[in-house]
Length: 235
Ligand code: PGA
Image (tube, rainbow, N blue to C red; front, side):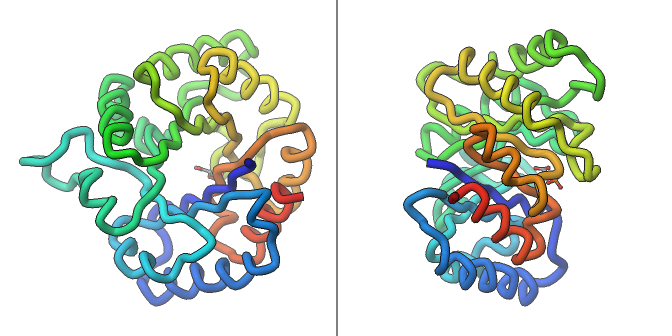
């Protein structure tokens, strides 16, 4: 089944706004065929308790998870803590976290922990691939990042070229499809999806070439835009 994931990043500013945004996405989802598309919302950690009871059709996700079970890890949030608040999905290895220094080794630990706790994993790959890099260069970068996946772990892999994130310049649908096919060949059984400037105007194009889902940042903060993207992947 197709999947559309909203990554709210460090937005919105208040819990009232977070609840309002979640409620208006939920309202819009009433008219969407849930048999065709899964929807996940990943708010900042602090809004998880408030949203635990306000999502019904959409599942709750987190934007990160600690690499250890428990203990002295200032600022981290554990998989068990996330689960208590109804979190079903977790984003791991987002390029914005890799840019802060997350290594493939650290990401491998997070993948293990999420797997043990039966969280659905959304692994982001593509960090380090520059615009204009050849398909071969991108494949080499993806190969390294995919090597962090422990054996037997089923997951969603989001191909997110860093130059396409938040820039309004998405990758060409054909390029995305080519890289997703590569991901599928390296990690059989993974569900590859695309992320990077997906919006209400281009979502149909991605869905149309067989991309089976999207990780959406900016456009997930406007319920109308997010719902249009969801409908594109439910068609
Ligand atoms: P964007 O972000 O849709 O704003 O480009 C995507 C992401 O970072 O996951």
